[in-house]
Length: 63
Image 1 (cartoon, rainbow, N blue to C red):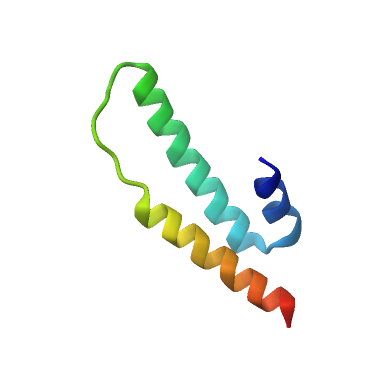
Image 2 (cartoon, helix red, strand yellow):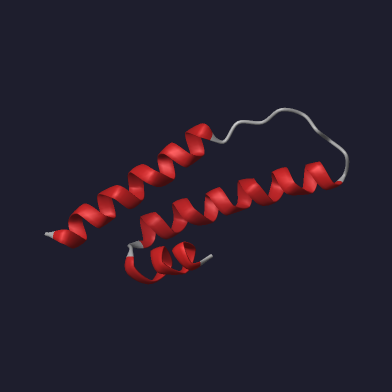
C-alpha cells in the first residue's frame, strides 16, 4: 500500500494508470476466488508492464 501511494504521488499519470489497471485485475481475480472460481490466471504480463513503466519514471526522476 505504501508503494502504491508513493507511485501515485511521485510518478506521472502513465505510472498511476498502470498501477490502477493492475489493482483492478487483482480485484477481479480476488472476486472470482471468493465466488469459488479457482481457474488459473496469469499476471506476469501485467506485472512486467507495471514494473517497466515505474522503472522508466524513476529513471526520468533521477536525471
